[in-house]
Amino acid sequence: MQIRPFRDSDEAAVIALWEAAGLTRSWNDPRKDVERKRSVRPEWFLVGTVGEAVMASIMIGYDGHRGWINYLAVDAAHRNQGHARTLMREAERLLAAAGCPKINLQIRSTNASVIAFYQRIGYLQDDVVSFGHRLIADE
Image (cartoon, rainbow, N blue to C red):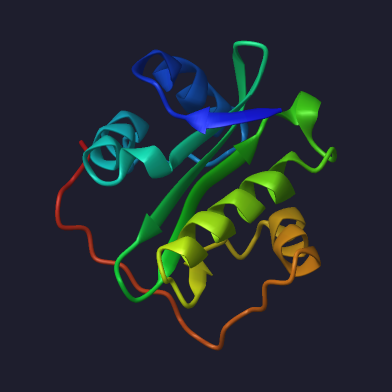
């Protein structure tokens, strides 16, 4: 797997990857998420490729207090080969270089395999309750 920044031409493949991985929701337009990320630190929107084919993605964010990981996905045909771990290590490297002291991420409580993945790579469950409030509807 080669890691590189997202390109405009990757959009359809990345969204298809997210849909296949079960990351999209009807109330959250993935095209708008791509557009939003491209306006804030677009170099931290990475894809993994084999040849020219996109087979993985990760969005990395940092607000000056905490780092955030969104849309980490690996195509089913390429799973269990260390690609997600590699993308996370790259995210950790970028965030540490920016002075970020801690990474936060959110996982749906029903996604046991992803919870187990993050535990295997050293992430711990924080004693918090996650809240959200939508400011802009993606309808």
